[in-house]
Image (cartoon, rainbow, N blue to C red; front, side):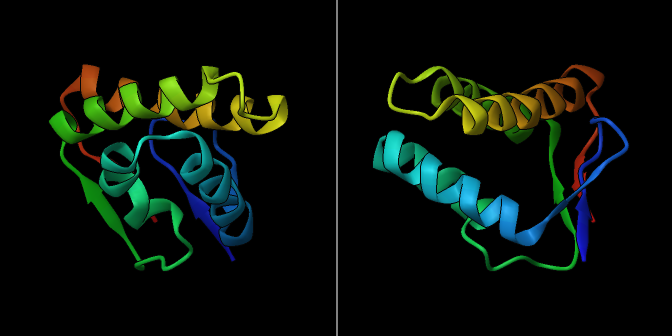
Length: 100
């Protein structure tokens, strides 16, 4: 089953892919940043997540820092950057960032 992410390209991501990204995020992020986004990337997915635009903007910053961290493998950094861009688009549009 795929998870669709709003404000992103029309591709769904598998839960396994998102959870694997989460493992890399947990490795490179400070604990206080990881705690903010863990509910999305730890593999315990809710059916639908609606993230307010202000939170989406904060998540975008966290994901962008992780994507550019030198310890992040390039392919996983690229994926983190895709998520960051989607979160930022939602924030800029003042719309919820929806995972379904």
